[in-house]
Structure formats: structure tokens, C-alpha cells
Length: 213
Image 1 (cartoon, rainbow, N blue to C red):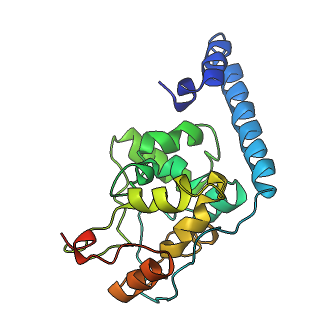
Image 2 (tube, helix red, strand yellow):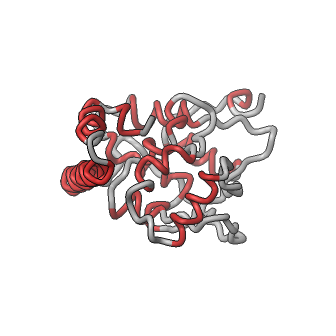
């Protein structure tokens, strides 16, 4: 089952294309391009400022982490305006943000940019039934309990003045301007002092047990 089949319009598109494989792929491509254009037009009118929040101060310059595929965050998040939580679906309900399954990538890239070397490499992993061996960039020590869920709740879900289309600006608090990068680079220190400054500026908890279990 393709990703499109999870969408109401996707079921119609799948049905329309059953008579001809070529026609079906053309209709799918048209739908995806129209959806991306609509997202871009909507996002162009959205403010990028995070209300009711103070970004923590601090920068970091670390070692570049090589990845099996040079994933272009800029093309996905900045150019095509794809919401961070579309791919990192666990962020709003889990401790970790999660790496999207290859099936989600192939939902688009079985059709889009199939001639590109990056996509051909992705397709090779897919056909071999292996996930790309991504390397972790942002990490904290084992004794630090950080959960994306609580931070997304505070700065996005419970922040009535923030439109969810601007979630990337909240992600940038800890991850920097990922939407301007290809593969992710660590540009924020993620130290205790960095976290404390954010908690102090945004009325976060000061109890040691909140972060150290």
C-alpha cells in the first residue's frame, strides 16, 4: 500500500490509475506537485516568529557527521515547505523525534526525482529491504532525560499564538536552522547551561529530577 492510500484523495488517485500504470503514475505525480505547491503558497503567508518564547543563547561548532545519503533538509523543509513533524512524526508524542521509515520517503520518491543519485541510492536501500544507516548528530548523555513531546507541547501545541506550520522555528531552538542545511550539523551546544538558560527564560522547571532521572 502506498502512502497516498492513507489520504482520502489518495484512494481516489490510486483507483483512477489502476487501468493504466503510466496514467496512474502521472496522476499521482500531479497530485503530489499540487499538494506541495499549495503548502508552499500557504506557508509563504505565515510568520516565522515564535511568540511567547525566548530562544536560548549559545552556539556550537563540531565535527561534521557523515551520512549514507546527503539528505537535503533545505529542499524539503525550506523550498518545499514540508513540516518537520511530517517526517519526524514521533516528536509530538515521544521522547525522540524519530527517523522516518524508508517507506515514507519512497511514498514520494518512487515518482519524484528518480533520476537523482541520492534517490537512486535511497531506492537501492529500499529494494534491499534495508534502512539507510543514519548516524546520530544531536545527542545528550545517558543521564539526561530529554523528551521532545513536552517541548513540542509547550512551544507548539499549547502555544495558541503559534501556527503549527512554523514548528521549524521551534526546532531551531536546539537544532539551529536545519531547513537551511543539507545533512544536519550540530550548531547548538546542548549543554546543561544552554538548557538552564532556556528554562529560566521560558519559565521551565528548575527541579533537577525533571531532567536527571
